Length: 618
Image (cartoon, rainbow, N blue to C red; front, side, top):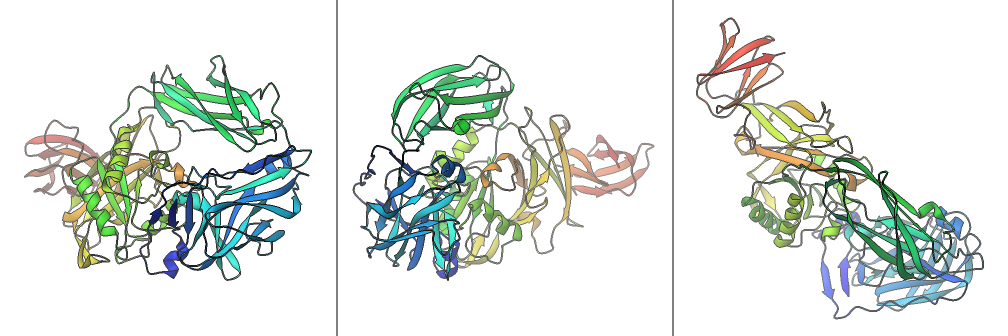
């Protein structure tokens, strides 16, 4: 049985420790789940699996551990009674707790409260002194328990989290501050209810389908994976799953699997594929429960639009590392990341000095990006392509995760690289040493119609920043530090012309920055103001500032010439460049600089080491 410290914003305020996930110890054997009694006219209700892990804050505090019964479910069970609550408790020095029912999660006074005696490291089935009658409004139910600094009183299942079943609150004065523990990979609270009554629904399966990838290979087989949960009082032994792709004939498969009340069973339909490039609609329904109609069909269907294509483009991965000077475990992760990225050219590494306090190199954008933690923050932490990698073992239900080892990070990077991109990103830049003006151009092409509006982001990072670092002294070299987000914090909406795009940005470097140690990172992503799991990076490019681009220029010679505003940008090394009007009058000359400012609009000829380039200045 694992014991783990919860990582919370409260911890960062209250304790001078490095905020990180710590596996305290692993027990030899797992304890089997204790089942609630399934009586005639009753059913089990909850979101959790087996009692697997014990978690706590690592300090003396009072917890409220709750699950939510939403109004939609309450309406199904209206008039039925909650007669028993089965709670999984972790390690606890005391034996008292309270079963609570709250109308609102923030209520201090409970709608129902019962003092109970509990046993640690075990399930505890509690019969309510007064059965609670369910109305048609949603509510919360769970328990309140006080633990010492050495207690890990909260029992959870460590499985895929459900945001209705993972609320943990910490007492702060008279109120409680809540978080979703599944966002740290702990899964659901171990709380199960026994509902009793003559009016419980008899047949009701709720369909859950694992979302397909938004972009898939044409003519490559894939599986449709799903599950059904029995939300009624009768055991179901068979049910039909029907899927349909576009306007093709629906295909029905009978699944013979026993699903007891409150339980879930999975299914997989294999060997599906899209035969043509383009957008496709996939729909799934569940019906025919042992020959009976589902009494509530609002949760029996799922549909998704997917784009399939034959041609993808290579991907570079955006690696965002949350690290601060106060984090004593961060230097170890820096070494892992350096060893990982030194041997490859397909990973753009940026360090956000945020997540666990701030330091001299913190910028406000990095602090805003802690939104991707989904709640509590910590360091060291890593995010790859702003993608939720929980199914690949990241241990978190948000894009940010704790880097367990160098091998762990490398495996996840390899997974991301294998996900070929549907849009290209080509980064070019020109830097004027005299004016410190940087011009950045990003262009690319989408291989298919995009499912969502893309956003462009441009970062500037700097190496060789000397400062303090917990665990490494006062003369530590900080590299890849985010210095500036040239676009807006959350990116700028990318306007496509057909399936192509091109954008140009100009920025003057701060005087304190060393351009010889700076890099430019450009990436295209999805964007969502509310869901941190819906902002995946589609592709990335990066290069050292003013150096040859990672993508070759479009000209046959050694230089790529382009225009940004009234600046002629020259990419690539050269000796002499001269700008002429079309009638042969010399306008400007330069020796090795990558940006030449032109005063007037017009058509010009730029001769670079004897090679002519025609440009239009607007």
